[in-house]
Length: 502
Image (cartoon, rainbow, N blue to C red; front, top):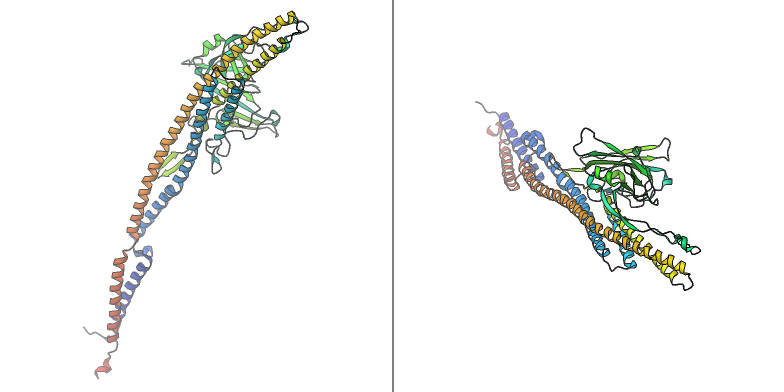
């Protein structure tokens, strides 16, 4: 085979170009640290790189954003629950102090003020928010748990609230019947003074979650369902609205429930109480148009309807309660979601506030009776009173002392109830905190696992995409020497021609 100069030149150029191309590839690998610069260079590496990058991007979203955000939310919630528990402990201590026999009126008033502040702070903790989102309000993260401003009846906003109870929610309390007032004593005609004989009466009631109510709704019926009574799911007892100042407020007629809007109580006759105390479901629907600042919003706790009469037509909003709860879930791993929120209705109850209100009312009753006794004693200290006046005042003093004894007993009963309910409430908060803590531990375990996976994915990506710099440098130097050698050889070949041999 004849080898011509042209063939040698072509081969020489091809070899130089190959060597130069190899040198260029190694130079790019050395400069970028990557095996390939475009998918066409190695489709397998490119496809694997795309899959690994997508997986790592998702993992980074979970590990660096979702999980830290979820942890922050849960940290804020846990802090609020711990504060609530501390407040409950203080409430329990105040109730223990209040049950003492040696307290003065000043001591009781001081305890009343402490309890009032503690109640406000519990509900204020319910307004805890994270990044502008309320953490205890389920899906309604833009709505506070409590009313930040008072609502008056003149604001033309009405809530129709449906509360669900069972037989265990009905309770029996002691009530002092037969109070006496100073205006019952007529100094001009003392013999005509008619006084009541105070007595302690057992009262069966259902205590609603609010007081200062507007009226009963739902046709004025107390609906109840007896246990295992499927043939007659619901029965009704007529409800009669009656003022707390009515002497018969706490002595209902059999077959009728007294509804006391001022105190938010439903009073049952003993026979009716015995008949339905084993009910599995009791429904009460009522209206409320006034809320104090700091009251819990009913839409977070009950099925209710909010009617705003300030616009035409009236704006009506219906709120329902999801039996499954309003769970805010974060995706914290591939196909793994975790509930991060705790609902207010599971940790912050109306009952503790209502119990504190009743303790304060009992303290006020005792203080009022003590004040009346001092007034009567002052009148008795007047040497100019007649025998008839003295007899009437002494009779009143005796009955007021009896009233004081009975009201003091009721007050201590309220303190004892406060002790019991605060312990139960503390247990409720402990359960909510434990539930949150168990979810937090799961989140930490997921975070640890994702941290390890992130390192593994980065190693896989590096092994798939990155070059070994030491090996690349060696190969680059070899390729560079080969390239220079090819240039040197070519320079010698191209110098020779046919004329050199003539």
